[in-house]
View 1 (cartoon, rainbow over the protein chains, first blue to last red):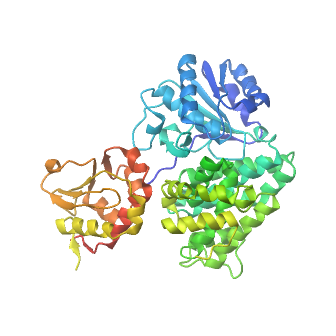
View 2: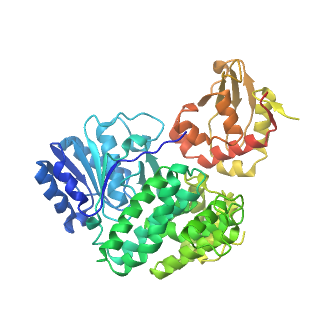
View 3: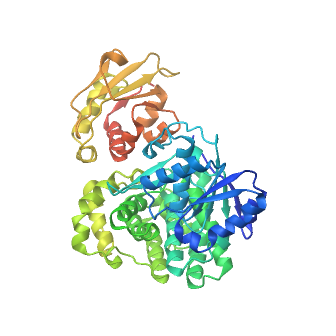
Length: 396
Length: 136
């Protein structure tokens, strides 16, 4: 048995209008200062005004939100007493909103105690709405909460099925203002979710279709969205694809690229989508040598495996097809101007090697690592981190 | 020769496998905390068994079957019916998913375990190396 968790999703052009019908008294918007300046909070306020709901804003969320920040947000919630919490933004504000909500409802908990094994008893004081402004992390539909322990420089994978949002509003107008680099980074994050959700050992029949569909949409529409941000067809397709990928991997799991990407983000502050998508082709190459089947199957579904295409669901999908998928993803990164190695990020080798022990240790013990199709040994992971730095094809 | 599960011989062999595993040693090198695995009755197994597994800094100093849960202190207790344990040992039930679906019930600090997911996986991988007789 397993679970499939999803909020009510309102999607497509005009989805934000759903806020006009919201019942309630007070909403606390959890976001970052940049989105306030961009006017996106005002868009939400206009709809809340129509619904007769007061609004207060907590805009102190930073990229890779910290435990300290969510405690401040929870304090703001305690003081304001909202019956709706709205996470508005990319993954950071939305994850922060989930944590703020949990701590508002359960002030007895420490952030690190938000785990999937205990009942939280939420929805006594408020409910949660998520509004993504990137396409995207999928955080609008997942129950995962990623916080950063700033002292240990370590990302913490937290969350509970109860803290999935009640409503996710997936309106492409909220992502239409993304500049090309952000469009590329967040789009590649969504692609990594889709690929890892399909290929991890926790994949399910219920999530496979979402992951495959999301990957197909992203491969088709991400280059368009990066090239022309005013292409609203591409924007809408990407926004929907990111939500599909979020539902897919959020109800399956991410995998090795995320385990490696998390530590790159925590230590070198590489933007999440950029970090995981750099690692993804190398993790596919690593898996292809011993466990290519799911990658080959996905390559066949996406039409990027070399002929003859392996049978879908066949016993041995073929390393060639898996490697073709890795190459396809690298080509996409290059097409949209994203780096394909860590060296290309401008991180000096000496600085990288000085942190290598920590990178390996933390990635090794990331919860996403254990769902990899081929789990590396400690030494193999170390070697993999070096190959990803150099941009070297994986040959072990 | 296959070892009966659950039994003193079985848990001691698991302990031996862990001590031979470089991968486990690396993933658990600063782990401290012993386990008791409680095998509860179901249709395939009558009775209740208590398997103690000592774990310290990447090694398993000792292991034994106990006559009762209280015979030795342990930081963690995991309870499950015989059938669920069989699924874990045979690789059909991921132990983390098992705990998330309450098929395996954990008593102890879950967040501490969640900081060592690789070590948890290595323990299950070592279980698979123990030739096991489940009695049917």
